[in-house]
Length: 167
Image (cartoon, rainbow, N blue to C red; front, side, top):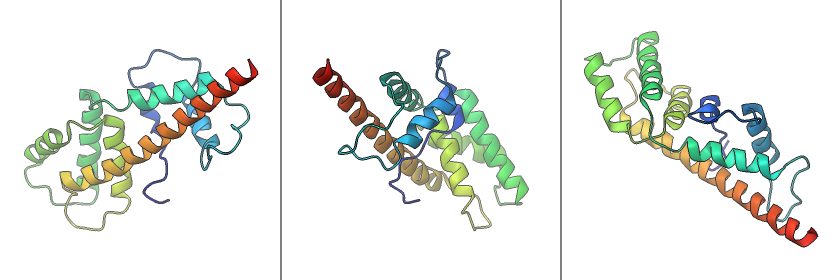
């Protein structure tokens, strides 16, 4: 996958602070899968409704706010577990985790978690990734989400145009 490919939000982004919806995380993933590789010059994929597209946009927007305490705790738990599992150098663990929390607190929780999971799958060093390494990966995730959101907005615009034309 190239760095500009749309990236679906992780499962926790779908339910983050949202009111219960008739559309499940599988529905959102299905919408995003139908739009993978879609171009505005093509027909809208079968089975997509404005409700589905609006829900997917809402999920991305909801997931774009700074990490809350629970999400930061999950992220810091992932960091701690990674360091322990591979006996990586972390020094003063609590002090280091506080630095990570401070330096990355502006990033959305689902983005932090997705970015760290992507980063750790390729990490080859005997030290922990620095906050800047995680931020760089998070920026790639957010760029992918921005592209996905633009694609969703384009589909919604095209649906509205077709409805006016047929209506």
